[in-house]
Image (tube, rainbow, N blue to C red):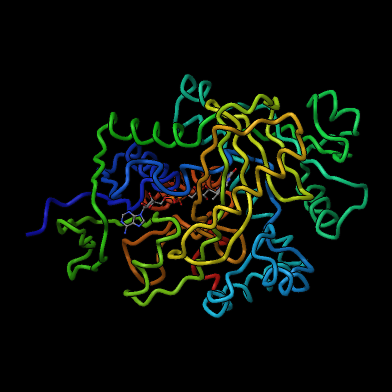
Length: 416
Ligand SMILES: Cc1cc2nc3c(=O)[nH]c(=O)nc-3n(C[C@H](O)[C@H](O)[C@H](O)COP(=O)(O)OP(=O)(O)OC[C@H]3O[C@@H](n4cnc5c(N)ncnc54)[C@H](O)[C@@H]3O)c2cc1C
């Protein structure tokens, strides 16, 4: 038997799915969200919490091809590829390298900026001013470097910031010492990006989206979607582990697992997981006043409501390989080098699956040739920033409102 028909079923209760669900519901659509995990059970649980309207630099940058052999040789470097997984990841990696050509980087940065610049506005729309004030700090972010030489990728990053008119302030070693007492001498220069911010708890922020969704009449269904089946008369059946559920629209927001539901439909999207790690220090005894990204060692620290989160690293090893805790431990070593007084007795290590496309842009909007199926996944490193504006864009497209930004750069068709 098929259960009652919903207006829309959203698959996935992460930041992307819940943002889409809330925007759809507020536009008058009856929405159910399906996920075997409670809200914020995926990558949305343990990320670094950076909310970055000014982030417009994709991950793939010119010159990356030269680095591939090194990645394969160093399993604990900032970016590693598991050798046995390399053949599976190769097509994605080739597209990724292709996306790193300078003219592509500039076009991608335009689309990243168009989406991200609305992030704080969307978080405020979703949460309301009071909850927003309790969860989100609009205080800027700092990037730091060790040494004076500007790397080739740092030059491109500067070009992107100039192209996008992003406000920044250079910080000297003395400025950094004043802002962050106890920061090591090796950290020689920095950049303040005042337009950015962060959340004091990614998990609580996304869980709050789930609570608001429920309070406003939405249904959260604790099931796993197993199969998407188009119906003859229009609409979709979502076969879950316990029921068949039908709806006019299906919004796929399954993060890094989204491909599992698309492959059987013959829909191919280049989605790979870039596994990332965090170490959560509950009694750090050093709490910087705002998030710091160490660009030399590719990690970041974020002051959160329950301690200091050290996050970073990229590991290409698929959805099944066991976590490599050494990667998270290395992050703690990096952070202690940056703040020698840091303590790390009570620590939690975590690994999460970034849902990543080769061009750092999410896949948003209607599925090609499949009426009623919509995508909102693939946010990679930037889903806490991109999730809410993506949810709004997709909800607007479904309900026939003006999208506000050009949806074309995010369409699945770009990979054909
Ligand atoms: C270490 C690390 C640091 C990061 N730092 C930042 C940062 O500072 N700022 C930023 O913007 N982003 C950051 N990110 C990226 C960000 O966390 C992700 O882009 C974002 O959380 C993705 O959200 P999502 O909703 O698409 O996926 P997820 O949060 O992973 O949610 C997907 C959900 O879909 C569900 N699901 C999957 N398959 C099914 C199915 N068949 N049926 C039902 N449900 C299903 C899963 O259970 C899961 O709950 C970071 C990521 C990592 C790993």
